[in-house]
Image (cartoon, rainbow, N blue to C red; front, side, top):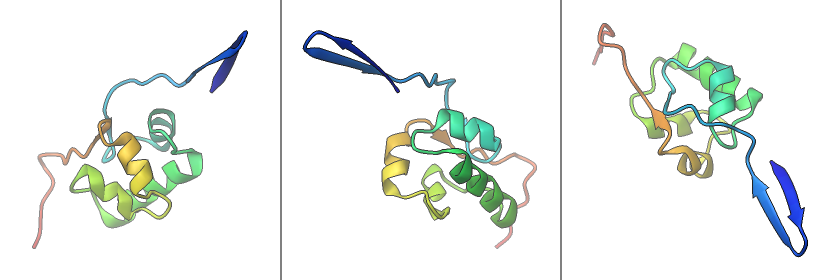
Length: 93
């Protein structure tokens, strides 16, 4: 975050640019950490590892199952997260 001081006022702006919705079922750790607020490289790697071990996230809010991703992080990012499951994925009961 950059800070610009103008006399008595302070203007803050984020240097992070947003590229659009992030698909948590296909994004790399780098994409996750660049595009989700409050998600750094370590948490992003946990998200990818969780997905590799547990399978696809069924819904965007299921990202909260990842240790270190709580409700606050999800709520900050809920409008930016998608959970797209590829069509060729077999679903078992």
